[in-house]
Length: 583
Image (cartoon, rainbow, N blue to C red; front, top):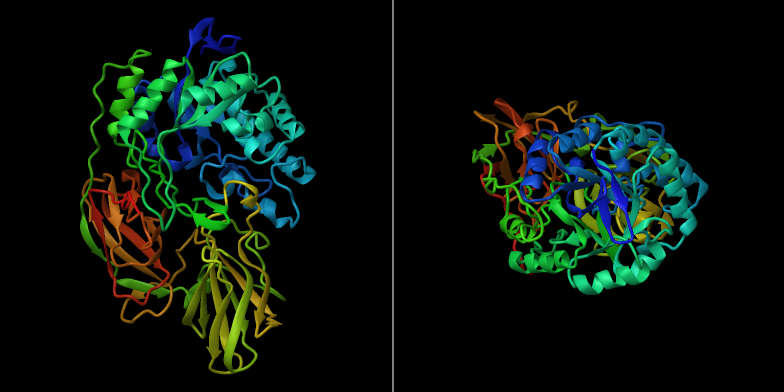
């Protein structure tokens, strides 16, 4: 493969002037059976490069472990990119942001109560060095210097928005170099953060979505020579629960792209194809108020969540054609979609009654955090005995992130971090009544100082002003539902419950699951975790990739957290509903 060089005037590839025309495509947000299709469409839009982050938290779910199989098979993804004739930009972190859970930092780091993330804290650096020691041997054969497609590797990610410690960045760059990364390194920051986030001797790039001339001028002022590049050209945006579906008009986005390319700069679209925050992997933001990101990462990108070209695909390809050769192939057609209609969920099992099938309880004087329990995603069920009968005031110092409260199995209220709620009145019918608090991790904060985001019940829990002690803490990661004793549903639910149904598929194809009438929860199809739903919106359907389905019988499980309603059916439709575009 050709080698990328950084000269005073710009990039060269084997001595010839070169412009990076790249698109973001995160392998961990796309079913692996669909990687080849998405990469082919990357090339067909006229791009010569694909960019991806690497999520540390998935590759190293526990200290001392490392996995790169299935949907995390970065080795296979890079081979597919090379086979498509694409170059690759790799952004391995350790921090990636990406609206991803914790910005990609493993939750187990937070088991240490005073660790300082993204710093020279020896505990953090030791963990980073171990991660790179496991990741870089996998990456090495794919470097352009070894004949692979990887042209360049990023150091950290938008560090200038977080800190100002050149020595920290130097440590990361040195670790990459010692690990065999001998292709060019680069950093990326928003224009106002370039001075804090750049590393002398390493190419600085900028992130923005408009005012290209102005923002590139800021980059040139900070870096007088060398290539100009926008590493994150924001042509869409992400959605959060309770807001609206964010879109950007294709014509205006194409005009901004034209202005950028007219400067001679290189570009990486953020995103070319967003994909999906499957399972519990979405992140959150917290600028005074906690706001979790939705399951869909459609991002209003040139390829939608199902991998179909949007108006932006054609508009951007037309602009790119003014500056570089574009394949003569026609714009790809949308893939087939299934409309299976309604599916009845005829079996049920209550969560609180059968929580012991999902996780083992641990006793403690006060509630333990998820991190102390060695848990990353999902829920924790906390239980304690109420000492006396009668009315009480329950106060929780910190709820991370949403707590459903029950007395003897009956719901009495909800405390939400997003609404800054900490107190709830309740009544105990008897001495020894069981207080149950089901806490959902709705996504660790992925940006800013809030990344130190521990989950569960934090701090003191008071009952009538006195500490409530002697707790059981039951982790519910919901990674395996096989032990749940489903039975035919003959009851009216009054608490969280799993519901199960089956449906038949003749020929698998993409489809969209609609949960009209349901309130909040998560969905699994054939044991594949699709993600969360919430009637709060804006997202009103869940994307179901074709490879998740089987020819013949298929199984769906829905965890409804507010199971007192009458919804008993879901529906598979041919179209998605990501919600209204205006508030």
